[in-house]
Length: 287
Image 1 (cartoon, rainbow, N blue to C red):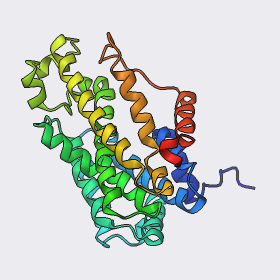
Image 2 (cartoon, rainbow, N blue to C red):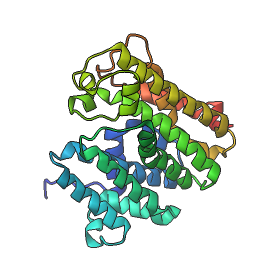
Image 3 (tube, rainbow, N blue to C red):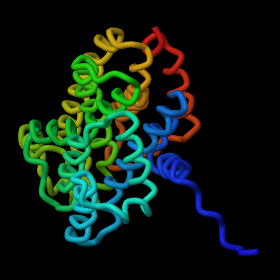
Image 4 (cartoon, one colour):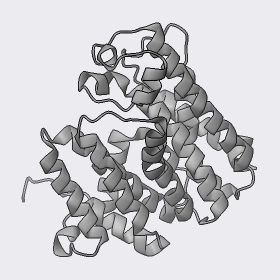
């Protein structure tokens, strides 16, 4: 009898990947029906694979090659090798079963090429474009999986993605600054007389805090828009936006007076479970 462990099936592989690297989305997917849950976890596992590339390569070229593989997959140029990739296999199944467009998936890959280089994010508009093609696209595709491909759902998804994405940019500042990578827009820093070298050096200055406070204010405005429009969507669609409850909690934590923006503050899984469970039972997501 072989001592080698039996490899997990593709669905289990994706679920484990999301649980390990994107716990809020993993928990949110648990509240969806079985078929939709499997597709959501495939979508989120794909996102994990793309986001992890910058941490898995030391030079941009290997990252570009990995991204090109996914681009070729969406173009129909990858055949046999896709079957050996559990995330690709599950994602292709979700695309087929829920008629997902591949254009946004391919654009998501393209946008994450920015991650491979140390070029600064130039403007607030550029950051919003990046987040719309990444975070917002995930919400839009999740809403389609939950049965809603309407313009209204896409509009809510755009604001949801901007709010969640801004929260992630601020939360990731300690890691990004240590890598001399800047997702905070230069335009924003300049307007508050904050130098990029101060950010890379991890200097906690009033000017940097003012820039972060402006971003947090922008994110909260997007959250307000989502809250005002979410009730217009069917309850089944609203389940696709459950991860936003974690983003709201994150923004409250990131906005605490006196918080050091360069001190990592991981959120416990128990707190994440509680936040998403409570949101799943709230009027915002059920009525």
